Length: 195
Image (cartoon, rainbow, N blue to C red; front, top):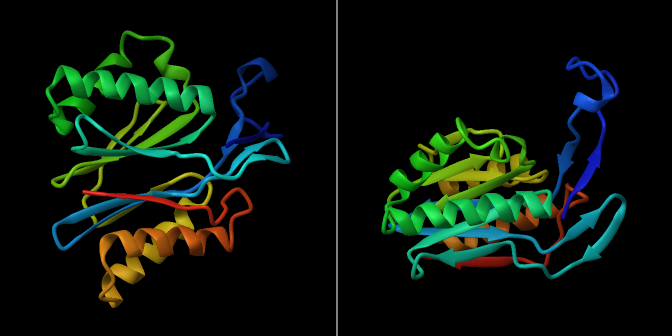
């Protein structure tokens, strides 16, 4: 799922303090006409090698009421995802409160501060991007995307939302397909989940 390399001109000092740049996957979320969909590709990449083509990087959580997709270093993404899922259970499915509590954990949990991962989460009311660096971003638009193909998928998704009659799930699928035609870390084995 990930490809890493060191920044050659990293301003953060010694090599031991440098963090790898993560290149992995495409996950896109789309809200339209009262529906929400999250789609991702299935490629897992390790360095320059494709290790798997049919991975499932999106899932329904909290009794099928919340969608989540992840990108980044696999172990870090799963750790971040598990923490999020725990907060969702703690708040009885209140997505906004769950992401707020997760953000608060960064102040006290040193492990959380160093996760090279992103997750995109959504229910029918809201969508958020959560990073392993402590950022929680509430998405105000109808499309959000993460991963190395995220910018391509977001641009495609926005255009399709504005200029087509496609449903949220079809827009999400098409956005990942477009990203896959540009991003080498994204393939066309797409999983789409909807609420």
